[in-house]
Length: 111
Image (cartoon, rainbow, N blue to C red):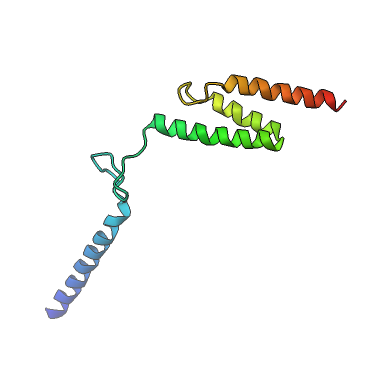
């Protein structure tokens, strides 16, 4: 009889320990107020995230252009075209035309 209680207690204790250990792994998923449980901050809105991503891509394109890597700059500027108009730079088309002019100048100057 006594052995039976010990076995049952160990099983119950193991189940409880596993359940308690699994709770922190959820990472706050399902928070009703939309806040990140660990940092206490709200997640950025999609529009804000788009602007941030567009800013990062714009910096990358500018750096590529400054290095003379015009093909990479053109690739990144074209990626920016896929962003909503409110998120991309207002002068994107001017930047692309300026880059095309640079590449045409470089190409014709090398002949």
